Amino acid sequence: MVDPLPAAGSAATLPLWQNAGWRPSHHALLTADGAWTYREMADAADRWAAALAAAGLRRGDVLGSLFENGSEAVLALQSAWRLGAVICPFNTRLSPVELRQQCRLVNPRMLLTQSQRTADLDPLSAPVSGLTARPLTVMAGDRPAADTIAMCWAPLAPATTAPLRAEPAGVTADDRAALLFTSGTSGRLKAAILTHGGLQSHAAASALRLGCLPDDIWLAPLPLFHVGGLAIIVRSTLAGTTMALSRSGRAPDIAEALEQWPVTLVSLVPTQLRMLLEIWPGPPPRRLRTVLLGGAAADDDLLRAARQRGWPVAVTYGLTEAGSQVATTWPDADPDLSEGVGVAAPPLPLTQIEIRDGQGQCLPAGQIGDIWVRGPGLMVGYLNDPAASAEALVAGWLRTGDLGRLDLDGRLRVAARRDDLIVSGGENIYPAEVEAVLASHPDIQEACVVAAPDPVWGHMVWAAIVPTLLYSDAVTVELPQTLPSGLDAWVAERLAAYKRPRRYLVLASLPRTASGKVSRTGVRQALGLDAGDG
Image 1 (cartoon, rainbow, N blue to C red):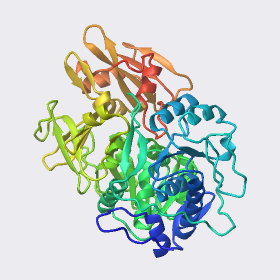
Image 2 (cartoon, rainbow, N blue to C red; image 1 turned 180 degrees about the vertical axis):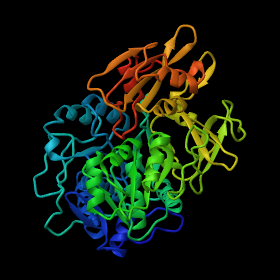
Image 3 (cartoon, rainbow, N blue to C red; image 1 turned 45 degrees about the vertical axis):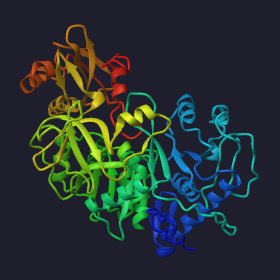
Image 4 (cartoon, rainbow, N blue to C red; image 1 turned 90 degrees about the vertical axis):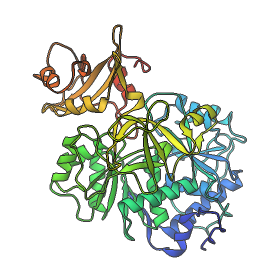
């Protein structure tokens, strides 16, 4: 059964059920464990939604989801939206303490997870039950329901009995769709509120930039509990195309997925692309037309290597609060690396970018300042945090907290995240610039710089580096010693004295978040700094 079109003025639909009628046998999802057509996915999501509704989930409730990448994560989202509930996907790497903190903020009515994790997550039952109206376990199969643990569970395999159909809630564009925790590596806990209309209009804008073909297959190695992964679900179902999930975000599993399926688009973070290039011989798969590269700054050498080998990289800048992409290059365009800081990326269609000073006044092209964004997909605020919402959203504009500049033609170059800015002796130091110089050294693979307190200058630069020849153990090296050979002289030739790192830590790899970004908090901790230092 195909859902009716929404009433006039209601800009949102539930595309999964529309495409179950329009493209019933077309693949909606490919996983290592099997494929799902649009009809199969819609029927399964209906069964999940019917079970959740019977258990008490209602329109506007928050449904927590704790799944690794797989069909369960997609079905949890779709079943929540079927009922007009709000999905809140939790990071699967969270400790019980961290999950308790996040649950207290979003107050989920239910938490959906795999049954085999029940024993592992027993400590969560107390904090979650303290927040839910009725602690219980939901089972969408033929097992009896229980009310002893405050989490829901539903099976992966489609039921063999006649499918249940949940009564569609008829969501509107302004209805809340998702709560996503911001992925910054510092600061207090915040959950961005994204709407159905915002997510769908943002997906349409992304399609205008990257293109959309009927047989597209978009591979998602990114976690679905981050905006980069969730956005792929929305883009694919809105277009009636196919989403594919690799077994993990590791390079061998990404390579396996690229070999198994005729993937046309893939979303990667720089670390994933670098490792993929190391194990992938020759040119990219013939059908691959876009590698959407974001989540962290990509160094020039990586972009040049990918371009030389024929990988169609589209560099993107985005953030959770903006619904994902803000500025994105075309995949067939050579990255403009002429300015030394950041790739020049034009704003997404329907998106405006301004660079402003600390008083909110617009700055001319070429000057670095705060990045402000207006366009589709912006969050409506942070959950239960009016002060932070008012600080971030001003007259329809989002203050990203990041620093950048606009070229004369309006393309954005990102200089640094606001929290990453280092101020020494009144001089601004942009980590991206220092890291680019370090990474350009032939013996350095990756680098991350952070602020360390200094009694005279306020702050100084400390750096963690990963040599091209990896070390098995971490070794701290104090200047004026040089490791790798000539590094200090190399940096001195390329940076002003106040920008040069005063301490180095050699690591086998940089610490990263679940989404693959370098964790500056982790780097600070490795350097012996408190998370709040700098």
